[in-house]
Length: 401
Image (cartoon, rainbow, N blue to C red; front, side, top):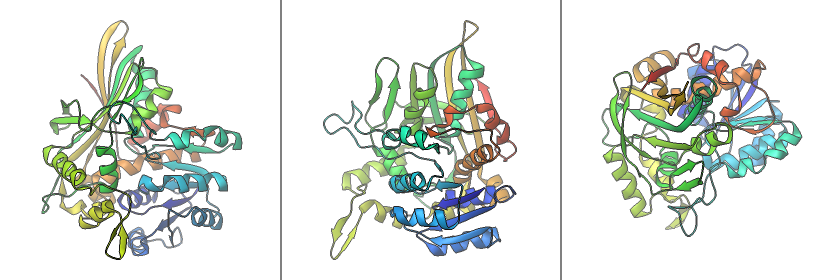
């Protein structure tokens, strides 16, 4: 398999590091706007022929198409902020190769009732073009990271093997990770974090369909396994709520994330000051997006690994019935930062996201997963994916609640 990896930030580096031992990965083209970053990752990987580097502007579709043709790639892997999803997605379609991302095309709030009704939903752009992809006979897998991605696989597994009827599927994400030496240092892309945390969260219910609530709504305390313990989680906009109901039969889908009071306070302040704005504004003679300034002022999550301590947990909490009796389970994966740094040289949050994409490549390469159109992880057989998780160093757990 030859892959054009568009985006070589923390997750992009982790994808390449996880793929390196897999001999069926013939070549990965490391493409990024920051060529020095590409060189840094290439040096860590130690194989200039197998991991070539290219400068790219991910906002320019023609450049993506040109590189895909130059290297005759089989798959375009989108590891950029979702701002660039449209040109990367469209480039893969035009070239006629498989496309994969870890976050879907962006949403737009409802113009009049943003905290009640959906406007443009996450992934709408991609799903509106599903028939075109299917007709052309090429495959787009959207949302194959950890959340969305692994969590969606868990939802399908719960439907197929653990429940007769599902009442609710709730994605729950929490951690006890601390970053030494910083008062505020997100361990994932702050651009993406602002986008998903300040947008109106989406909930799906069988009788109502998709609807929205105010940010940080419906707080609850969830007890995470393997020593993480109780964490307050709140509603956040996330792809699983838009994906799961398309393939899994249930009555309600939610996503809640453990942000913490300090993090929520910072996000609210950024919003109040307009620093979450992703549209450029003029500052003297320069045009710059306030959100890009915020990102530039914060430490790069890709370089925080040696300052991080703790574990992060991602998983799917499912409530329903089995054999006429109530049942609740939590299917999860816990990544320890010390172990991820030792084994991969990448911090836990990005590594836990990245391995799922490579498992997806593996299943595609060996003909286990196949198809055409725009599909979420729930559209495929979950067992082969879950069987490979331990082989990649990220075993799953199942906890009866």
